[in-house]
Length: 317
Image (cartoon, rainbow, N blue to C red; front, top):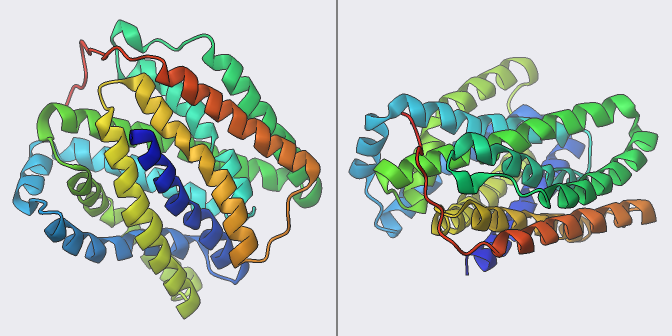
């Protein structure tokens, strides 16, 4: 069930890549693309909390007990994740960003020993085979992009996405583990807490954008609103729900995270339908197929571990 929820969230996440591409190609600055999503999320989260019977008082109490922990990892999980991703959208189409974003599967697995310290959290040597397939696929895709846009642009794009790929699983997992141990917030409450705590980042970014580039145009505001609703509210809440269902099993968690591979297909199709994008080249299609295959194989391998994982040292707060 958690994998199905992950696939549904991937569909709504795909709007991020497509609409960020739209905003970039129509003159919208990436700073506004990043900040608008989370500025819109705050007023959206309030009625969602009420509708799902989320507790504001309990959420604030949980945050207060470990404020700096929640604050720091919210900046990492949301801020350090989304800002570089929007920056990368200035250089590449949505499907290409979505494809390269699959490096998060590699990064998320590599982070396991540093987040959970019990003996069952060692990286399976077979994972490196799947990583090689994913990396080779991304190399094929980016090699075509390098010929079209130049090596410097590719390095900037991949480098920024790589930051996102480490930041998202790190921030999400650290908050998730602390919440499982102390807070016990549901997925909506956890999304609201992280969004609220990341607000200073988006206010600062929007102020900088205003002084340097001016206010966003109405089309970018509309796109930012749709991204906030589809990706920020629907997709994030569903994804957090799926990861929370398997929070005590890091290999099953990797399987849920592997559903992000569907973002490649969804981003490609949405780009063709909404933006009129053409099909990628044959070499790029092969690269996309390899990335998807590598992520699916990683997902299947991760799902084989049915034994609950016990942690000796979960979090030091």
